[in-house]
Amino acid sequence: MVAENLQQGAQAGETPRGRLAAIRARIGAAARAAGRSAEDITLVAVSKTFEAPDIEPLIAAGQRIFGENRVQEAAGKWPALKAATLDIELHLIGPLQTNKLKEALTLFDVFHTLDRERLAEALVKERDRGAALPRLFIQVNTGEEPQKAGIFPGEVDRFIASCREVHRLPIEGLMCIPPVDEEPALHFALLDKLARRNGLAKLSMGMSADFETAIAFGATHVRVGSALFGSRS
Ligand SMILES: *Cc1c(COP(=O)(O)O)cnc(C)c1O
Image (cartoon, rainbow, N blue to C red):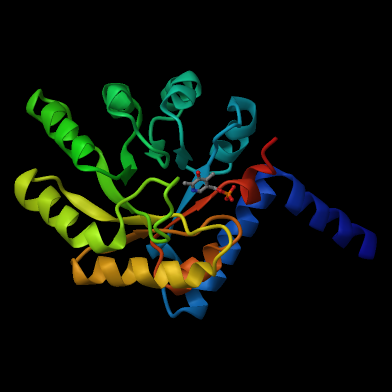
């Protein structure tokens, strides 16, 4: 019995299906603890650096929403995966150069990383040429880290207003990546505050190490990579 349980435990932790079930269970528990519904939390499975043979088992297990941080990498693997499973939703979670925008529009359903006026202008240009726009999150650099992308907190209200009133871009929510050496809860609370005062309902925050904390602070989209796929080499 003990051996059997151990075996099942190992299996649950080591197969993609088992890892997915475990993450979904943790999302459910964190949602309940916060008095929220698990249905209000979207799991974005971050598949960067992993190839189709690692991704297909998660699709087979029912996962449909995936995140990638590089356009080139996504272009290499997702067209075939999307052709095989039509209801895949792909989320861009890394910085986007405007010269890659056109290609990104063909691949991604949601951008989490709208982070500057120039990109907003480029989106408008593509829309004017007939492109369908993705759903949009604005990335906020909550830690004001110079090496990191994102709008500084003090500029967020102005940028949201510009996206809405000047560019007529439909903004769904805000996204952040807290500094590695700081308490993420402070950054999640700040992002929630910025979203609320601008009437935005969606919050993309929380990764493998801190998604339960993010859920406690209102995350609607958690971006989980290594806890699902294993560590990246
Ligand atoms: C890689 C990445 C993740 C996932 O990180 P894990 O710690 O592997 O869960 C989430 N968000 C962004 C923006 C990433 O680049």
